[in-house]
Amino acid sequence: MKRAAAGFSMVTAIFLLVIMAALGVFMLRLSSTHHATPQQSLLAARVYFGARAGLDWGIQQAIAAGSCAASTAFALTGPGLTGVTATVTCASSAHTGGTVYRVTSTAVHGTFGALDYAQRQNPDVKFLAFHAD
Image (cartoon, rainbow, N blue to C red; front, side, top):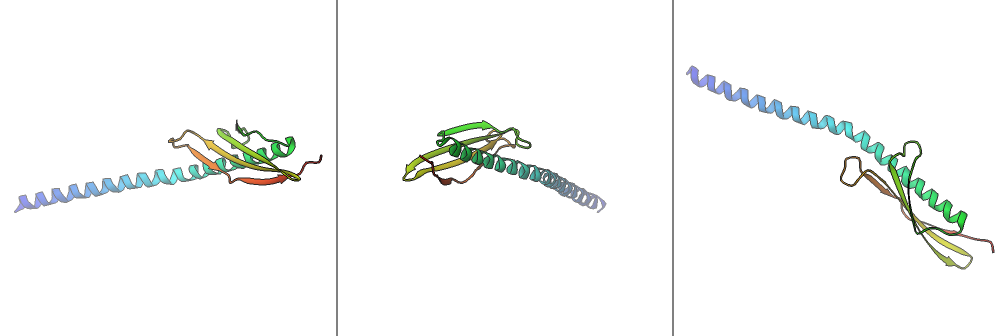
């Protein structure tokens, strides 16, 4: 009878060890997710503002020059934007009284598939610029 009780205690002990190990793994994964979430949020904000900066640059170029390049890519160097690359595309069409510009900006950080990868594209901005003849 004592031998059966010892076997039952061994099974219970192994069961409890497996449950404790599973809880430990769960807590470890929860902790790593908890630490990664703010970093991903910060990266998303950096890429968002990189795309905004590219959009502002594209609008300024179109207005100042009266024309725009089809596509321009450049690395941003402002505070907090290190490692962010913006690609600005612009299309224009002449209309009576002015030119309509369509500017789009896409910002990228890191390489696709890596943990530090983020991409953001601002919606198209269309505006009419009047030029004095």
